[in-house]
Image 1 (cartoon, rainbow, N blue to C red):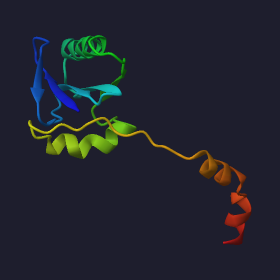
Image 2: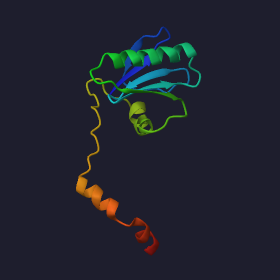
Image 3: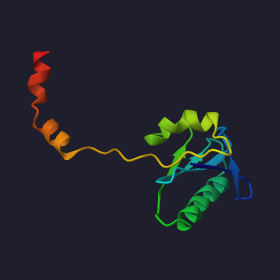
Image 4: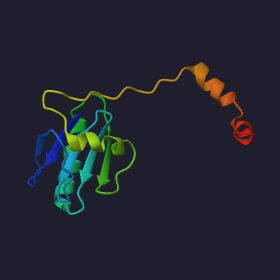
Length: 124
């Protein structure tokens, strides 16, 4: 995972943690998704710089990532699970690798699909 703060002139500054200040804009590259986090009082210009920086990062990679813009206090999905790690920070010499994909065996999913969950719930 790579963390960047967007400066007032539009450049990216690598950081080890996200402060979530109301005037800040951060770009968080989680390999599968590039998040552009916008503080409530961040300027439109700074927010636009964040989106452009995310698009540039995305063009430089082999496999394109999804880009999501998030507003302060309106975060959702997988980003919510990362907030504590982002606040605590990632040591410079350490990086968090891409999250593993969830793998289900076909037999397990067939077995679950064949269960009649409604009758089981009524009996409880």
